[in-house]
Length: 145
Image (cartoon, rainbow, N blue to C red):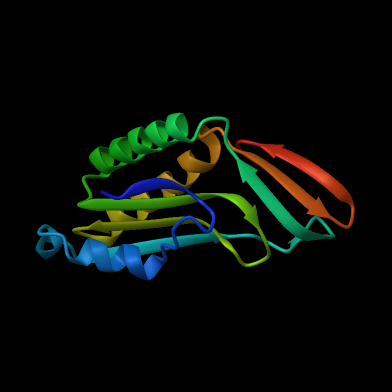
């Protein structure tokens, strides 16, 4: 399990990197599905043009611990083989990656459910603050937005 909060430009991890890592697992022979998700910065938001986004958390260490707890719970709930997550913080522009999630499991149904729950719990349970800078000014969105 590779679960990490990274500062943007600190380390460049891609979905392909996560999938390749999961495929090297000694447990891969138990898997019949690998599903992935890449959350990116949207450039249009409610009829306004977003120029940049700054994503922060008060404590990377605490948020990292919470992320690991969430992923462990999801992994055990759906009995999937592996879940890897990268969540970036920092300054971003349209199309930049914010969240990468890869789930490997025996069957597509539980793998899909684990992927969906991972994404939703990350979005709503972790303490992130988004600052959107647009042609409308600055908009602050707290966790769950």
